[in-house]
Image (tube, rainbow, N blue to C red; front, side, top):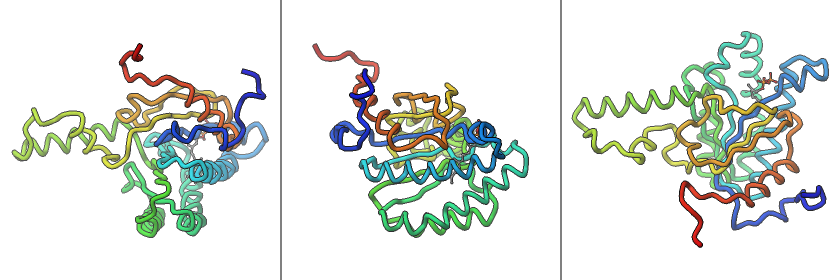
Length: 250
Ligand code: FPP
């Protein structure tokens, strides 16, 4: 495909074939910073600007669900200074964006082991989640202290407890019942998963939910990612043939 035919604008996307849910693994902040002889935290700060740009793009394009992998259960093992900086950045983001989210009809929710987050971050989350609860233009889901396997373990414990208590029979456990015990009972599965920075891994993100997601790996580092490339990915997504294991009708 010549670069001329690659759409650079929202207007060139087919509104009937937009994904309902985009999930993103925001990777490459550290490498972005290193290339510029900056510290990793400055990379995360620039990454927060990309978060704003992608949220704005989803709202403009009309994508109703966006899930961002902002902090994994494994990220707790990073140096304390970096963890603290990420928590501070997150709190600042929530405070700075609260009005903008409200103005644009964006609802914030969070998935993950949020009880592990510092109390002041949890308080900011609770405030923004409550303040934006009735918004319905875009649902922004931040995965924080999130791990897909931990989510599955949590679900298994919940179902096992219900069985042990006599509230559920094993034969009543089906796809739907499992999905309802995950963090995302009211959220459609992602149609596409994008990972930046050239790494081609899922890294424990939404393991159950991405069963049929289209996968996109771009070498672009997260702080360099923007609306133009996002539109290109969405255009590419619109050309893909999603068969869900079936065959095309002849
Ligand atoms: C991965 O880059 C990124 C993270 C672990 C954190 C993501 C955080 C942000 C994008 C900024 C803050 C987020 C919000 C929602 C305000 P990396 O550090 O693993 O990069 P590297 O692989 O190049 O070292």
